[in-house]
Image 1 (tube, rainbow, N blue to C red):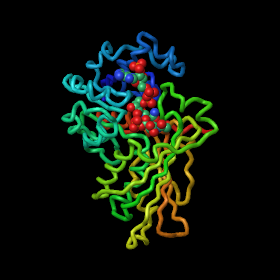
Image 2: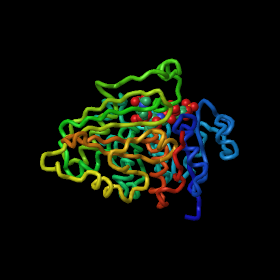
Image 3: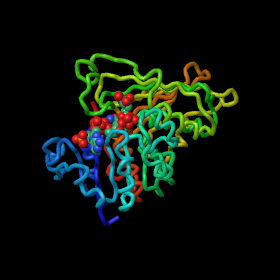
Image 4: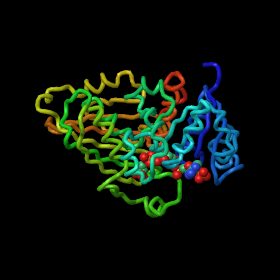
Length: 348
Ligand SMILES: NC(=O)C1=CN([C@@H]2O[C@H](COP(=O)(O)OP(=O)(O)OC[C@H]3O[C@@H](n4cnc5c(N)ncnc54)[C@H](OP(=O)(O)O)[C@@H]3O)[C@@H](O)[C@H]2O)C=CC1
Ligand SMILES: CC(=O)N[C@@H](CCC(=O)OP(=O)(O)O)C(=O)O
């Protein structure tokens, strides 16, 4: 592609917005055209985020003044409900939309309205949108104009289970997903729960009786399994900034006990450059993916019994949000999927 893709970002001051800027500033096929913040209008991006000094020369505009309709694609790194209010105008102007929030993730508007406590503003656009998990929906994404970028927890659980669900090798009535996220998952807005003195040196479960990612994960797992799954999903907040680790427990069907699961996962993901199936028995660590678009999976079968334990790690802000969104953009515009996404994780 010789001409650069003109990119707009709505919500450039949040954690996923600044992560999009970090990735897109060095993307060889991208020209950053517009970036919004209502509170920081007029402020130079690089004054606010010194890591972008010398790399991004834009200033924040309000969404109304940001020339978003001149873009080829607009990313929404905003709270739920913002993209759905602006999508039609952008589509009318021929602009593609990638929403990092949940406006275009759940196919059933009644389920959306129950969990997000707002009416869905554009059910017709939702019908034409695609759930942006490239490793599952690559061909459909390439033909789409609106992408619902997956939630962070759902990315780990769906990719962790896809190979066994597609092949119908496990019982689906009681899948357990025990998931842990760093504090950046809660966003940059000021909240008591994410204060240093509240979140550091502490570890807690939350959303045990219901979390809005539950219906998203269930919907996608049920599609893969071809039947309704029973899912127990418990998220936890761990005292680190970035990173997510999900441990998933499934019971192997009696007639599938002889399956070589390691081989199955290696074959399913052989051509997926962002998914690393680690050697059997490995213990993935969040730092092995920090600041990269990589997701690592390791399989365990304690006592060689009938439980398959799947451990998945990702950086919640990269493969769990901004990196996945750039991967979707690359597919939408026919670019090599790893363009601008070849970062190696940061150790220690
Ligand atoms: N953090 C994470 O790990 C993940 C986050 N997500 C999702 O991505 C989205 C962004 O998350 P995150 O970056 O953490 O959020 P933040 O709360 O950190 O940032 C929100 C951004 O949106 C802007 N904004 C807020 N309200 C509006 C509005 N009504 N119209 C236009 N802009 C608005 C804010 O700027 P201003 O108010 O100045 O306009 C700010 O730049 C959320 O929907 C989140 O659920 C998805 C996966 C992972
Ligand atoms: C640690 C933490 O608080 N994580 C967030 C989830 C991450 C996220 O932003 O997901 P959505 O895009 O679906 O909102 C939470 O549990 O609400």
